[in-house]
Length: 310
Ligand SMILES: [Zn+2]
Ligand SMILES: [Zn+2]
Image (cartoon, rainbow, N blue to C red):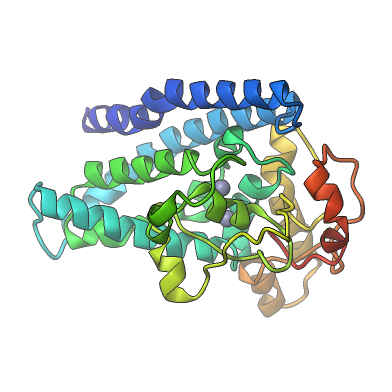
């Protein structure tokens, strides 16, 4: 009963917000068609939609196990933090801080990258790219990053609600529209900062891990602005290309499994699982048959000399 009461509101946050998301997607799609800019491809968008549904379903199922675990963990909380404005603000900031480290770890540890690569594997950048999430985040252990919040004494339901609200905010930075929102870009993640994060140009790789607050990138040296003369090339440096949600979901997991089986000795096996993400192509991807924009065509040379992963 407890599980039902909790799962529904937390899951509803993103589902209730989805009409707003669809309005933004429809408007961006309409504008891109009107201006003949190939920002959308229906196969890519459908794959993103299917991946979002799979992600939501995976999260709902995993919550059946994770919620009792979080409630058990809350018995060991250091403090009893009451619900008030100050604690809510503190929770938002701390969760965003942990999100930054979760995201940064997702780009450095293969076990986490296996899930996160899904989000980066499209060559397109539009609002529907935000829907491109992985079913396997619970397996990668995204939830581990929220355990300090429960141990500090924040309410479990509130922690999960803040996680969902953080994700909902991030929808709005997945677009080729807009820049860095003036002075707000000093503090907040913006479309321009996040375009950099999705780009595989060598100068942009592993930059701008922010969820809501870009201050973490500025503090920890991972901030990179978008350069006018270096157009973003979206996607990963591998020659991966698929619109099949299952192929996309299990792309890196299959590579990990192959490496794990081929490795001899415990150390190399552990490296296959938890080492740095392994670029498939050291020199970056070959010229792909992709829905390229003019800006991407201009920078195809950079793409060829690209770096390790997204
Ligand atoms: Zn990322
Ligand atoms: Zn993104």
